Image (cartoon, rainbow, N blue to C red):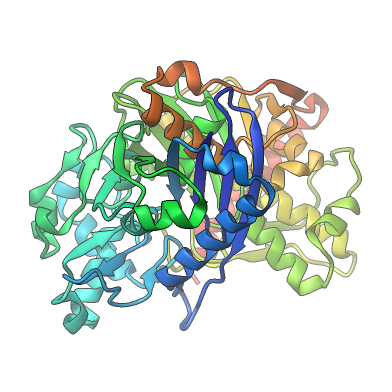
Length: 482
């Protein structure tokens, strides 16, 4: 058996698979996000441990015998978080999360240093780790002075699980400190933020062993001593492993809290000016490109909170047949935007409201706004040298066939829906645990699921969608000015 642990923004998911990659069971532990000031987003690392214990306990209650047979554990987690610990492994402050934008000024200052884009292949985004440390140095110097190690969220879990300070290439590529082409820390960039390589975890590939489960936890969970813990991956690279998106030409679109358009690459293809992420993949000698929007299902959940209707009720009001975009346009920049604008200060908007703009009209606009933001990502990836012929849809938003038809039509490519099953980050993490524990060939393990359904672009609406996308594109510079 192999266990995948995915530390998400809203919870920890534990998934158990067997040697044939059949899912035996899964369980969750809930998490909340603290927002003490506008633009801030934090979590207490102690809550990650609590939620992980809850998730594994849930598995143990239903599958105690299977859990006792675990030979490998893989880790996945939300990226970019700054988890700061002192020389005694004590947490110095709440973790500053990926969607926290307080360090936008520090990010701009670092990005103005040409070494960062040249070495990392990426813009220094406010959500990345390095500007967060620059913010801590300037605003909480007493905390910065005590920092012994900077760990990404899943790697703090690894420290608890194994006692090791280690990270993988895919997660570390989102820090603004990694030499992404060479797959190693850059002492030059660390020095630029007042840090040294000694304050970073060691680096391994996502498929490699990165510690062994501590005896205390092995006893608590009924496992053997010495279970292998894999390097693991950042959440999107882990999802790609779960989806089999590991070879050149493969791509997926993720409709989760954030939205992602992810394409695997056989070589390193940076183009930072497009705001496309060029990161290491979780598999050796593999990279990926990724466009990211900060509010995907988060935008629909916001709309749900305002209207008092669940996301499912809202999308049900639209029916199953795709409609031409209406007169209302929604910009989904509720917490700023990453690709392609790199703008932490921009905020969302409804444009074109009229007396006739009923709730369903606004719901349609919200879905289309996220769709057009993903189209922006496609255009950015194209400019960086990536061609996408089709995508596979994952994430909670992919349950809406209306939304998937909208995306297929806006992108002009078929959208594949996987057969029933959970092929996300927890499954990908479990696969990495299997590879690390057995030495199996990564490409033979990280295969694509069967396709249950393919949603084709609606040819008759292609023109209307193109016109609506052009209107959408014109609105960002218009509202940015105010």
